[in-house]
Structure formats: C-alpha cells, structure tokens
Amino acid sequence: MKQKKTIGGSIGLLIGVVIAILALVRGTWLVPLLIGTFAVWGLWLLVTQVFPRQTARKPQQAEPFNRQLAQTLLHHVNYRVSDCLKAGYPDARWEWMMRDPALFVAQGGTGRIRVTGIPDYEYADVTVDQGGKLTCLLVKMSPVEKPAPPNQQPVEPQQWYEAQGRQTLGTLVADLDSRGHNALTVQEDGSICISPKGDGTEVKQAVLANFPAKDLWPKLVEILKQEGLAATVQGDCIAVTW
Image (cartoon, rainbow, N blue to C red):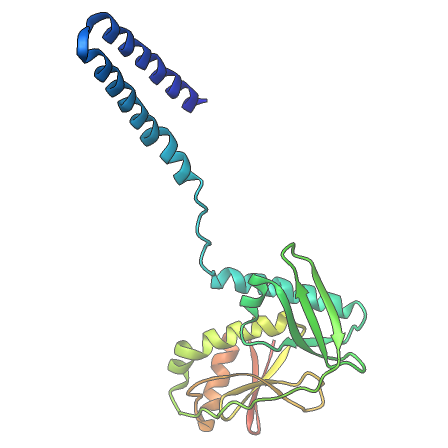
C-alpha cells in the first residue's frame, strides 16, 4: 500500500511538471525538456521501486550448523529411538554407528545403530525425514570393530579433569543415559567402554586423552564422586555408574 502511494505521488508530480513545461516553454526546447523529464522520472522509478524489490526477493543464506542445538536435538531423537525399540523389546539398548550422529539428526536421512537385548537382531536402520517422522527397521549384519590406539600420559587428576575429563565424560554420560545405559568403565589406556549385553563384552565409546596413571586413580575416583557419579576402582579399570 505504501509503495502504491509513493508511485501515485510521483505520477502526480510528473503530470504537474509536464503541464508547467507545456505552459511556459515554446519552440525547440519543448521536446527535449519533456523527454528529459520522463527520463529522470523513469530513472527514479527504477532506483527506488524496481531494484529494492528485486534485492528483497533474493533468498537468504542457510544458517550455519549449530552444534549445541544439534546435540539437544540428538538427545530428543535418542529418546524417541529408545521408546520405539522398548515398545517391542523392553530390554533393548543401542548405540549409533556413525562418527557424528548430531550432524545426521540435523540433516535427516538414514543411519545405522547397533542394538542389544533384541533376540536375533544386532542392528537397526533409523530414518529421520524432513517432516520429523522417525522409523526404525531391524536388520542383521556382522559388526566391524576398529580399535583405537591407546593414549596414556600421567597427569595431575584435578587439572586433567578440568581440562579434558569433564567435557568428554559429561557429554558421553548424557548420550548414554538417553540410550538406556547407566554404567561405563574407563580402561588404563583411557578407553571408555560399555557392556551392552551385560556379559563382560565391552564396546569402546571414546578415548580420554592423557588419562592419569593408575596410582592416581583413587584421587580421580573422589573427583568423580564430587561430580555426582558413583565411581570405584576395579582391577584394571574405573567403573562409573549414574
């Protein structure tokens, strides 16, 4: 509406100028003045009305990938996958089989998970479409494990926990909890493992860099307890529950 008023006002002004020229100018200058008047008005119309509208129609660039938002969305999807599996198999537990599940959840598509507690099945394909619909399809396939190299470098437990342990453990515990797990073990080389089947078979989840030496574990256990985690030294590992 505002744009129509602006164009209407400019037309009124143009008519007034043309009438003034016709009334005051005679001879050879009449035609050039009229042509110049229409040219100036046309140029004004292009600059103020046409070009701004074309600029406004340009699509906005996609927003960059938000890691924190994607991690929150991942936890929500984790709970939905757990509900889907536990509806038919109450003892089901699972884990993602991709490097960056948060990115997968943000973009959608199909990703594979490893499941336990479901007879005759070891894997499932999770599909998240653009409309937010989630489906799980159980599949059978032999797993391929790629062991990570050990990482051992003794450091002072409190300094190590503040610099590296807090963020890694906090993120992993939240992720495991959303998938139905309530325990993990930290090996001497810093490997964080879970036992999905509860039979002692462990699956590596992550590796803590520069994990403190074994003689410092009692102090590290006390630090974990202060953070609200139940931790004990058990032979060659630290057992953590929540």
